[in-house]
Length: 372
Image (cartoon, rainbow, N blue to C red):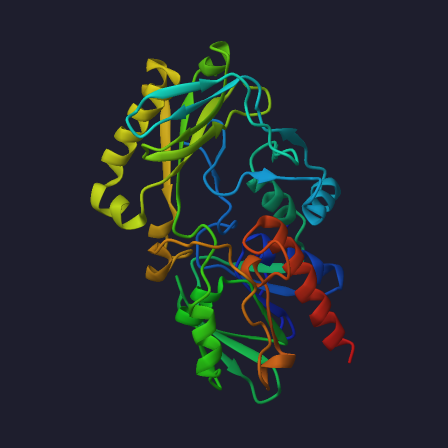
């Protein structure tokens, strides 16, 4: 288990961000015998991975990413197997429904089956991060800690200034790995010496994938839609949910539906959470029958309202998938600071697969520099 009782030694590598890229970076660094200081602005690990429950004993539901495609997600498949995690296929048996703009509902007897196959982790996507966290032994974690400044130390090391529960603190490390999305990196952290304005401007123009989105999950006693011959898959031109799927657990006994909210972040803010939930439940009733309007509990996660994920710029619609923003840093930072995280991945940008690949990439870069 992770040891939080010691202060990080001065030669520790500082990892900023405890999402998948940060946790996997810390794990890989430990495999090289390296001590790590992992700094996270939230009160939890996970980043955009959030598997939550409404109350004790309730099933966990994914309010962030939930799917893995083993046929194409090579690194996620590797780490799931290495960590002993179990996957199960996304439920797609039965008819799908389509809601037209006038609220007319059409039933399609054959559900469109995703190829390659979509699978999910037993215990939610957070099971992957929890398994990594449980294996950390030389990593100290700081939660609710916001890095505001990175300095180049005179002895060619890195120092970071952190605002946290204990006030402002300064930590020193032999190097740093930053796994924040580029916009947060550009807007939240100052550098001494400063970075070129042209570089931070490019980061500010790089969208954070899914940061402007919202996801709703409704939990029920039973998957009643399956009994009616429905898969739980639905698409809508009316909204507010535009794409809906079965979110039940592997056994199907903990039943749930989830949907992506289609109205913009600005409209969501004007509408308010209560009205958005009410309209969404009314829509689920149109699609799946009156039982869908009375869930045991509902979760709505509006990522555009999460300051640890989104900036105001992320509330604007994104019309294309993000491409890799520039990662190369000028001297003296090029041998001290390494940029990871899903958006900085060389492939699968924005996805969990990209986050895993980026962690492997930055630790390999760090190791190559450490051996010089």
